[in-house]
Image (cartoon, rainbow, N blue to C red):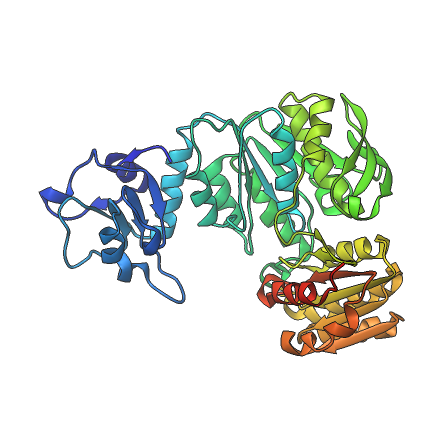
Length: 465
């Protein structure tokens, strides 16, 4: 992080500088922002956040003792250490966003914002891989895509970075608006509109409204990149200015994929056609749904002047984020580790990938999908029914309370072998009979299910070569 001075922090936050003359050095600088007192170090700004489980104000002394230069607070401390600064604000969470906005404005580089119900992390990673063929790219890492994570990502910007690709998550109206106000994107991407967070938003129409907040502060000459195969996003045609491009495989779109061929664990091959280029490329990822991240990355790459050869090289360089449909080979067992998160659309896509994979036997370990509200049981049943209609699924182990509905529907949809377990511990008892040589195993559930535990158990049980 480049240095920011106390006077810049005050201007960004509108805060009040507390303490006496020994705490009033406006030229004092920070070179990092930390929200964990244990990570605070020399020159850091400690942000005292209030959460459901703890209050950062309890750790101000610890952060300053570890070397932090000062802190953002909501409540004034009882004592002030000489040489440290204390800036009081109404909300430390909002203040860190204001500071991030001011910091981002130090860098005159383009920003791509990515949101959507499904696939935003994969799309972000693909865009970064393609743009990385020509530019030095800063991208969101892990789950740093919310009102705290996005500002912390921006603080990683340095003068060496030439372009920024940011993932934007949300669960309610107004959240994308807040993030977009911070970053002011030059390119806005919506991957799709699905059922994720429908518990909070009530309908797909409201989900579309929430996702569309990404356009609220887009730059005057910005670009919107949308899936042309998503009926909800198609309703935005002609409503987003100044420029919108659609990507897809259905109908007429300027960015299209054809000749899609699955190559097993190697990924898939397809022909990409754009207004400026046409080429055939092997995508090192599984599933037909991968054409959308590829096409969106191509649209953005061409917008920033990349050649067809650079686009193809970037696609081939793609590496998925951990637990996002990672293919793991352990002896004669192949594990499709997609355990990071799940919703009905991504569950169907993952089952389709499993059905198209090789192997002597295909097994899905599926867990509860959260934040679906009263529609939860019905949407889980829909996934179970899909498992029967997609074909080539030999066994399902459904884990969790809501997953019972998936289990019941899969039984009625003629999936050959269907098992239900109420907990992960119970599920582990069934794994030895499922983890056999020649098996391809998919693991997928919402983040709160912590399915990485089952993935580790599958790896342990997989026989060595």
